[in-house]
Picture 1 (cartoon, rainbow, N blue to C red):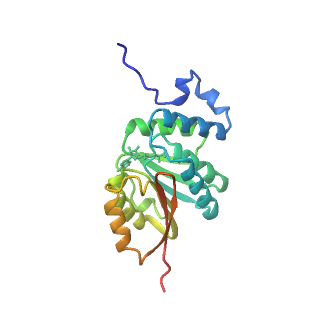
Picture 2: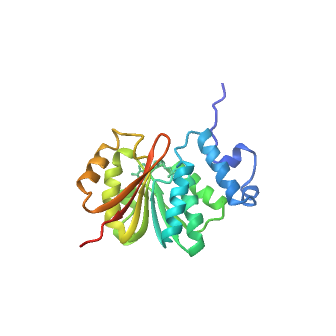
Picture 3: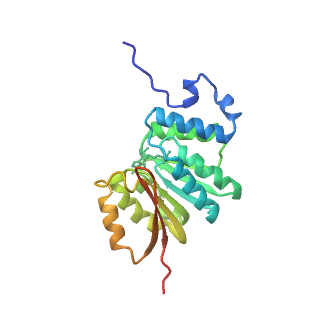
Length: 209
Ligand SMILES: C[S@@+](CC[C@H](N)C(=O)[O-])C[C@H]1O[C@@H](n2cnc3c(N)ncnc32)[C@H](O)[C@@H]1O
């Protein structure tokens, strides 16, 4: 039996070219990319998370954003689309090369030139010289979320925002993150945005008295 080739790029599954896709509106592109992710079981952010990111990006208008874990770039494109309005830039990365390559293609397909992609473990590919960031979105390996958060703290500007996805769905994997937050609650103001089967958490630093 012929091996099923899973298309990395959604327009290949529709026999379209990148030029065909570049003619589409971003709204249409995002809807197609999200649907492709659902069909291919790519763990892209939910539409609720899209709304949360867009809301806080518009509120804060950060110039420099860091994303940890881009997969095929759905959330990266959502973030960079907002940042483009005020000349902001996104630095993102992924430890999976095929995912990163498809993320680059997707950014190109929706004509976004304000994203820098780095391949590898984000804890190694990002350094202090890259910061500070006004906004950090954490959506990588769930069992390492506490490590990503501790790293994000060192890269965040004084009044920056950290958004963490999937804080409820994987209680075992997220245990050390929740324990860390409990210990650190004197330093952080945070709230949770509920989703039907998950949650997103938003953090800002508590002001020093
Ligand atoms: C939930 S997916 C990201 C989904 C993406 N934010 C979106 O909504 O389109 C998590 C991604 O994190 C990547 N990842 C896991 N650990 C990582 C690490 N240490 N450094 C960089 N990427 C990592 C995985 O390869 C995976 O593609």
